[in-house]
Amino acid sequence: MNEDTTERTLLIVDDDEPFRNRLARAMERRGFAVTTAESLAAAEAAISGAAPSFAVVDLRLDDGNGLDLVPKLRAVRPDMRVVILTGYGNIATAVSAVKAGAVDYLAKPADADDVEAALLARGLDKPPPPEQPMSADRVRWEHIQRVYELCDRNVSETARRLNMHRRTLQRILAKRSPN
Image (cartoon, rainbow, N blue to C red; front, side, top):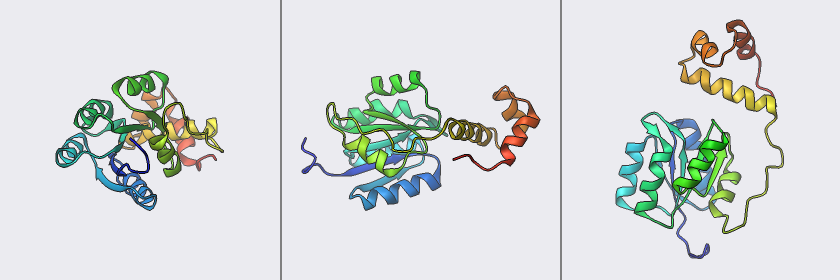
C-alpha cells in the first residue's frame, strides 16, 4: 500500500468530545477525511458502511475498552493502521495494544503531529521522540486530573483511589497545571 495512493480516511473514537473534535479538525487540515465516534457502538456502526484506512482509538471509553475494537477494525480492513490513545500509559497496556493489532500507542495529550506521524510511519520507521516531552510533574498532574474526572469530581473518592490524603489532593487540585 503506497502512501501516495492510499485514501486518507480516518476514524477517531474518543469519548472526550472537545478532544475528539479538536483532533478531527486538525487531521482534516492535514488532508484526512475524518469520521468520529464517541463509543464502541458508534464506532462499529461507522465501520459497517465503509472501513477507513486509519483509526485513532481511545483506550478507555464509556461503554468499554478501546482494545476490544482493534481486532474488529482489522477484521473489516486488515491493512488498517490503528493507533491507541490513552491517558493511562503503561507498558502492559502498550504491549496488549500492539498484540491486538495497533501500530502505535500514544499517551494523551498527544497532538495531531504525533498522531499523524504514528499513523503514517512505515516498517521500521519510528516517529522521532517529541521535542519537548511532558515533565514528570505534568504527567502526575494529568493522571490525577483524569482520576478526579472519572470519580465525578469527588475529592474523597479520588484521594482513596490514588492512596493519597484528601487535603494533599485538594492542594494539588487548587494549583495550576505544571509545564
